[in-house]
Every structure is written in C-alpha cells, then in structure tokens.
Image 1 (cartoon, rainbow, N blue to C red):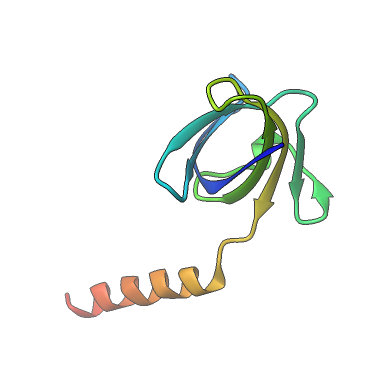
Image 2 (spheres, helix red, strand yellow; image 1 turned 45 degrees about the vertical axis):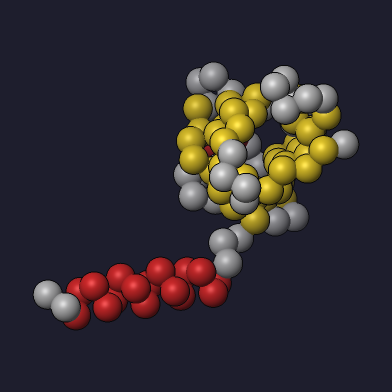
Length: 96
C-alpha cells in the first residue's frame, strides 16, 4: 500500500476526483470510488466533506499514474500554521 500526504487543491464531486499537492510539490489527481473509505476524524465522510485547503492522508494501491484509492483521511490543519497565517494577515492590515 502506498501513502500520499498533502493539501487538497481541487475537489470534483461530479467526476469523483480530488487533486492533492503532496509535500514534494507534485500534484496528483486521485479517483474516489464507492470502495474508497473517507474519514474525517473518527467519523465516516463523503467526497463533499473534502474541502480545498484540507490536509489529507491517502492510502492507495497501484501506480501513481493509475492509483486505486483505498482511504482518504481528512486531517485538521496545523494550528501553528493557522496562527502564522492569521498573524501575517494581521500585519498586512496594520501597514495600510
């Protein structure tokens, strides 16, 4: 089983795909099927629960060119990162 961790760049619920940019900078378009288990915390979720900007942990089989996605776990964004982004946004507003 292969693992991919990254940030969701796009969600296409009609086509049942998500696009994830992994930490190495490569983007992958991943198909979501009826067999794909989607989890948000400890609860089962659906593709519509996956949002652009979410951090996800994905387990898949096969090659990167044609992955068979077995599980998508939606992770909470890092609190440290959120605080840094808010702090940076606040500094930008002060300069005006």
